[in-house]
Image 1 (cartoon, rainbow, N blue to C red):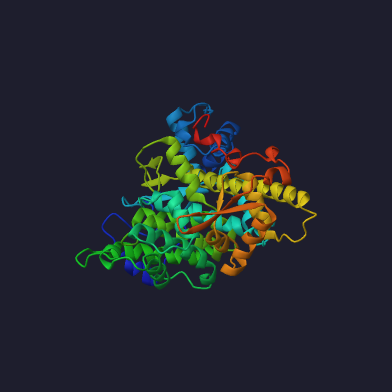
Image 2 (image 1 turned 90 degrees about the horizontal axis):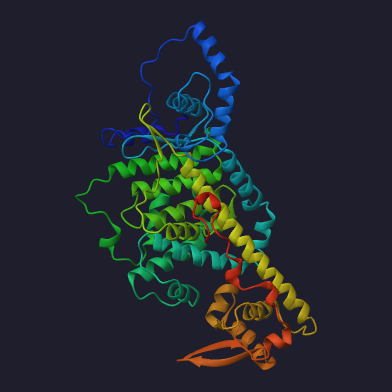
Length: 473
């Protein structure tokens, strides 16, 4: 395994409790190989039946011990086959540099589906992708805003913060002042996520991580954001320094894919509780930070936690660990985390497909609106997007605050957009309390043309992939 740890991190690691180390496990007593040993090893690994069994084990992300139809090489029992395949997989495994609390190192091999997932991420998530060009375009900005809202709320809920989606959405897009600690956390997470792009030149250092945490917890009472002085956090500090070393050098030393590095950073942050509080929210911030720094901005925009929350809710209440270890290998004091990585990458791809579906549906509606309203050249792109949403969601309400946040415009411009639509009869105006709201006018669908063929927004919800074993959803 590559050694990611500079001298200062090794010194820090000496403070880690006995049985936990942030360096690779040292092998036991080695037995010298003889020429006959080498000949026997080559003869064994050259057997076609063993090769077929190894190919079968890497064609699926599930633990090899759960394969029901694992071909057994001649002369080997099932247990012997599993031991041999695991030993061979370890030769090509990629290790996470941080152990778990039992001191086990975690590794994975690139199964066929993991390779496909990484290929999909490469195709759609880099600064050179067509999706990125669409996301940063004028019309795509609203999807980044929506994804950020979805991710902020889902991340908060996964981290145990009690927050209602509609309330949080109103809080974020209406720029309302937070009234509770939970609302303050949601606002801080949302704003920090938006500002990370401007911080990508900062290196992975302890100071950077502490600063990001201070921004997440801005305005939160200090007794909730700091560790009591009588609690020793030297272990967490050592792991944090090691994580920074890994983030700075992973792509150089192990050629690990940036998406995998970001997922490992996220998992380690949540698992080790590197910060005094709200490690789930911090883990998502650091995931996005890693994605942006390595040139995968769309990966950072994706509402991955939303897909993870969908999976959690679909499976029902259950105990989870941030870094599942489905296959503990006692002989080496290691864990094969290939199934965990496959699940995480499948959630990334699901979130990517969900974003693509939303954008495709919106593009279809926008084209229909453009076609139907071609004669009205006075409408700008923002007004056309309002009409499109009014057609997609007939009972939708529109507020000036949302419109400002989504398009990044001033109050006067936003108000003028709505006033003109009311004058033209596309919208109606009313009040909810003291707040002015707008709704689709009674003749809107008749004037623009029915768009039932496009379908409702919920019709474009991408189901979780079948590999999660949820059956019909």
